[in-house]
Length: 57
Image (spheres, rainbow, N blue to C red):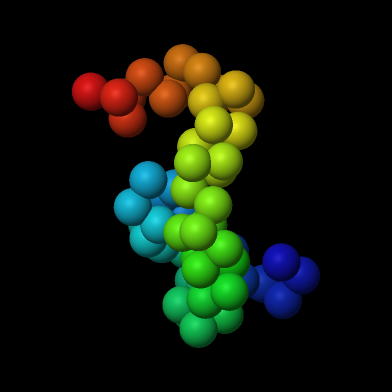
């Protein structure tokens, strides 16, 4: 984002876990992620396989 807002999103829970992005500002992105969770997690698993192990436990 170029407006100074930033955030870290938990892609499993789809929650803002760190940052300063108002939920209303990322509502559409979170709705998309919710509807495409399988795709999102599969892409994450391919990109960061070691970190993904933590979510499988």
